[in-house]
Length: 460
Image (cartoon, rainbow, N blue to C red; front, side):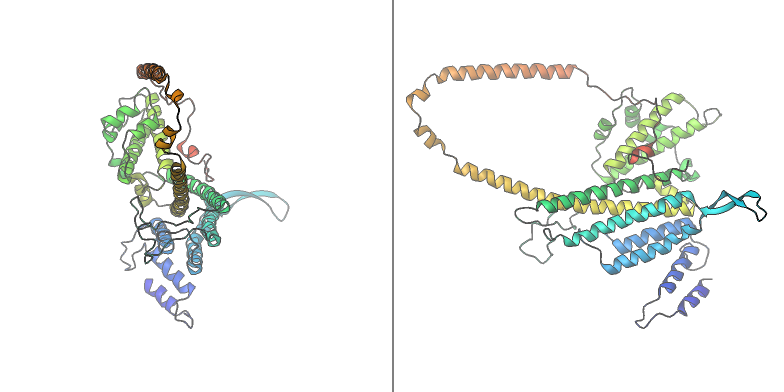
């Protein structure tokens, strides 16, 4: 089959410049997808869903790479992205579902028949993701009219030393702004772009979370889990989540999430505990190792608290790698439609986060310039102020009278203020701070909270 496709592709006209035609490239791409990325034909390829997911991810990586600057895309790269993503998304046009439809026969008799229609989740989300995709590219293209900030080249000796970043991404250049900072119009443009990209990020996150939630949990992942949440979380985390008083913000601040590794590790533990508690509630009336110990009401509370933690982690750290559960779902997923939606929303989410980071770089550079100007103004005002000798020279004998009384009064006032502050501090220590109690009077989904509203894919 591969040889036949390659022979057919080789017979196509490649043009006068020797470049392969679009039809030839498309045939080769789909031949690789049909064989599950195993071009040897040995039958060792992955599923079609995973092959398509990998193709979308790899195409985005090869076209966009790592965006290091807030600048327009090259026209050839933009055209390549549009062409190749259209090829891969065209698969969803043939994923259909049967729906009832009313028709009238020739004799006028009404009847109901089943007709095919594009699957509802794809019909809703593919156009939405295309729009989000276009908004990000338009944001990059709109930066061509901005000439107030720039990125120094590596050979620019005058800017050497200014291009050092304080974070771990030292290879990303630091933007430079004018000495007086950006103009008001440029600041408004940056803020508008930041707000738009932030909305794109939230929408892509909501769609991606909805699709992952609809994917089935692989049996291999379930078999690798222990039989209770305590063993997954550890005694310390389990005690914090199951305590009578629970504050998710305080919980996360006590976890010491100083690196991506720690964030992903905590996310893996929380997600595993949610899966365990849900299975325990499923097998509540059966004799199984999944249905013991804690009551149903408490498990619902623990699950709600865990999903609250996951929600905060998702919003607070949008750029962290995928969890073990997400990777397992993508790897064993057989639904081609879910694979397309998940991979496409994931790359848009990643691209939006990167563009947002580049916008933040320019805003921080402008803020640093404003801070430098303010410190210079302060130093100038200190230089212009009269010194102590000039001030003392202008004082008279009357100015030195009754200073001892003033000093005593000031000392007594300070002592009284110190006593009052000590009493206030003791009162705060003795009083117990209010704690947040998570209740389950109304069950709210983690996905409904993710972007402030439900994902467009609400099929159920």
